[in-house]
Length: 187
Image 1 (spheres, rainbow, N blue to C red):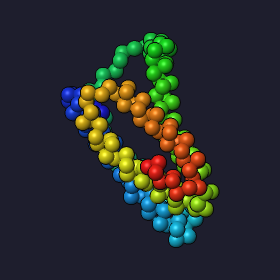
Image 2 (cartoon, rainbow, N blue to C red):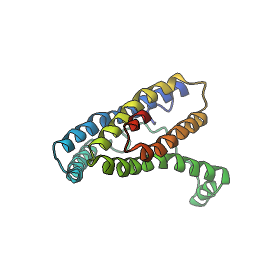
Image 3 (cartoon, helix red, strand yellow):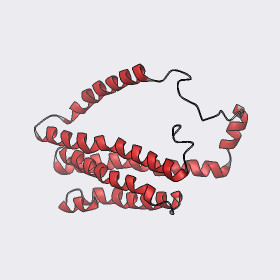
Image 4 (cartoon, one colour):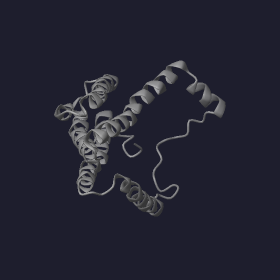
């Protein structure tokens, strides 16, 4: 965000959409690999020690490569507001409503992981289908995220509303279709 702050909005949004798409790509690779591992008898609980080891490795990389203070050109100037003034801004009903709306939209991701795991694992007997399904969802997210910069005429709020509606239909469909081959049509 800091690196693109001085760019025109369309270019900035395109760069950030590309970065978000790149962050989704590991799901496309890792989750199907877990699906194969589960199919070969690896217990689902093996995710925890593997995730711990990877988290420790990533923390080490961050610790070693984090820029020193002043190494990055800072474009975010402090607001200069006192704590009281900042809390007064947050107490503004219009801002509070936006924060609640963003929280509701963001909660969809958490609901997705919970619903998908709870519905698909018992339906199939393993975590393999859940991992494969999640990997395919992530794989489909990538082209749509990359297409966002091609829609500059659309207001961001409208795109968020459309995405939220589609996501809600998807979330409702997972438990309804978990025991059916029609589940894959939700993708």
